[in-house]
Amino acid sequence: MRKPRRPQDFLEYEKVLGFKSKERQVENLKLEGDVRVALIVPNDYIVASSGLAFYYVQKLLNQHPRIRCERFFYDESFSKYYSLETQTPLDEFPIWLFSVSFENDLLNLLDLLKKKGIPLLWKDREEHHPLVVAGGAVTYLNTEFLLPVADAVYYGELEKHLEEFSEALTGEKKEDILKALAEIPSMNVPSLGKKHSEIATGVIVDEFLPHAHIVSDAGVFLGKLLVELGRGCIRRCAFCIFGKNLKPARFVRPDRFESLVEEIPWKEYGLISATITDYPWLNELLDVVERHQLKISVSSLRLDRLSERLLKVLKESGQRSFTIAPEAGSQKIRDILKKDITDEQIEIALKMARNVGFDRIKMYFIYGLEEETEEDLRAFRKIGELALQMGYREVHMSFNPLIPKPGTDFEERRMEPVDVLREKEKFLKEYLKGFRVDFESIRESVIQYTIARASREEIVEWVKSFENKKRFRKMIFNEGRKRLC
Ligand code: SF4
Image 1 (cartoon, protein in one colour):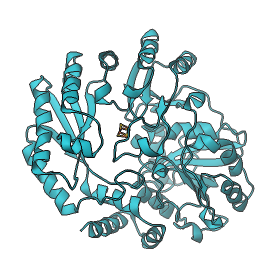
Image 2: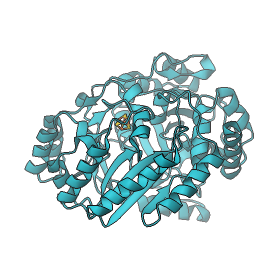
Image 3: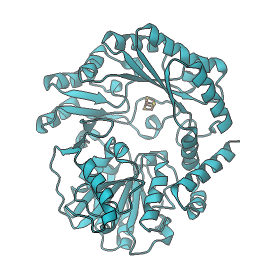
Image 4: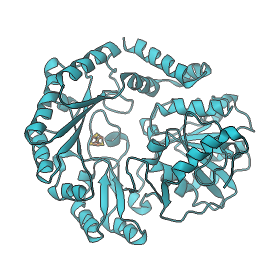
């Protein structure tokens, strides 16, 4: 364990140790290689530790005998950045691998580079600077925004070209590494003019059985070991990338999951899948859960495929609130979103969860479609009232503005203008008085939309003016706002 040399670094060091103390390692991981790779999730510890990539990518890379990968997360107050594993400062790692899940993570990534004195654009970096490689969930959207910043960007599922990718990282010089990375079809290496020819997908998840080796008591899946039981989605909601770009939907068989449960001395699991209710062997999976007396949480449920048995298991696992995503209040908007869910199915789902004892419900909704009328907005309340009539004592409605993303059916659409969204938000807040209601920030959503749509040239121009995160955020928002008028 390394200790800071400068007194001002102690606060940061202790914060990292504080999060480290919330982690329990349930599977061994070797940290022996001579090639040091920093896996950085450019978001805070809570967000980072709630995603499987924070653990799984480390595990995948450390399979290579020469690679020693350690984890980092972003914190606005940090300047030194210590690894979670050995508290080694980030500067000592020659390869920085960013796992980017959200467009807005770009701001944190730039802030981190700036604070470490690393030029923000790859073309301004030299041999002595760390090699910046990016990948992650955001690359399924096939966006351009990482290309001016990272030396190389991996698009899609890492397992598909894991061996070549890991081997490439062991190159002597930066140039050797980039040349080797450029051989990978899903890799974009802008300095060599190499474009990616695919978004890597189709990995057989049943073979890899993606799971974490660490349990964190700080993330969304508090105390649960994360296991990815499904990748991709059999649905095709118009606003979502999963059904379109992450094909085909693939699943881990229940007996594979059971073998993991028998191997690892852990009883609580966070099951990750686009929708666990579409899992093809749900009853067999629940048999495993009951046989081994496991507690489970799930990442999401489709309300039209709920089973009472699953809901009971979730309730017995300690889940206090029932969460679903009807997305829209009216059938008309739900049809435009291609959500494929009816009013009747919503009613059945609410009843079923109430019958097994849930009395708190959280529902996710999307608003801000050009076709939306006042009647459609009023329809949100009907669902909330239905839940109250059934005896739910807490009805939580969570709203997100529609952010039409590239790669989805809505890629030709524009986000609604900021003033229109603000009016709709105001109307809903007033109209839904009595319910617990929250709204995703319109500002952050516009930033997300603007970054997702930005061309490489635009990103270069914007990044050149980066002074600090606050100003950059303001600039991107103003830029996006103008475009939406
Ligand atoms: S919104 Fe959910 S159900 Fe629809 S495509 Fe995306 S992951 Fe699948």
